[in-house]
Image 1 (tube, each protein chain N blue to C red):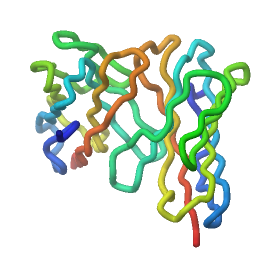
Image 2: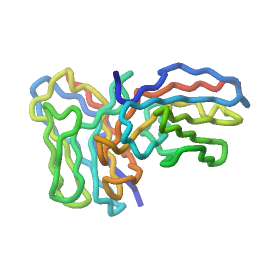
Image 3: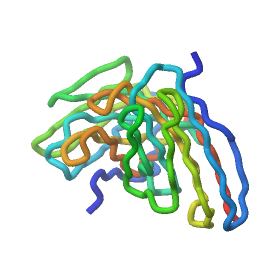
Image 4: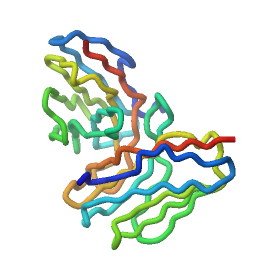
Length: 112
Length: 113
């Protein structure tokens, strides 16, 4: 079992819809959770991080964390074609103290 | 403020050749990292340096060496390149190894023939 798992997609949503990206992790001691966006041929850029159970909102993005279920998600409201990218879930803490463990990424396509 | 810079951007090597990938950051960060990214594999940690003067192995260190030259610079060396090392290499830095987020450089696309 991979330590951090994401559905690789591709996930296709129409413009204006809500895109829901999911991630599960295996290390119960994990403490911090990150979502990176990566455009094709570019480097990952941090868009959200969350440390506590519940929701965290930043503009059109909402990160949701459920440590009991070992599950973290990213919601993108009012999706735009410019949101089309690969979204990487990363987890830090537990047995991998200080080091990020990445999922394989979910490809999101927002079509007009 | 350039953030994290990497050189070169592209490189083609023949099997057995050596090369060094350079990384520098101007954010006064203590921790630096080298990752490789292969299709469908996400990012995998090769080596990291928690602070100046220390380096440690990550998930996939075989075939690589690193040097933390000073607080700003962290280089990755391939002593004898193999086709399996064809990948995109990213350098990253963070303020510390704890909860702080990592910032990535633009990447080096390496092909080994």
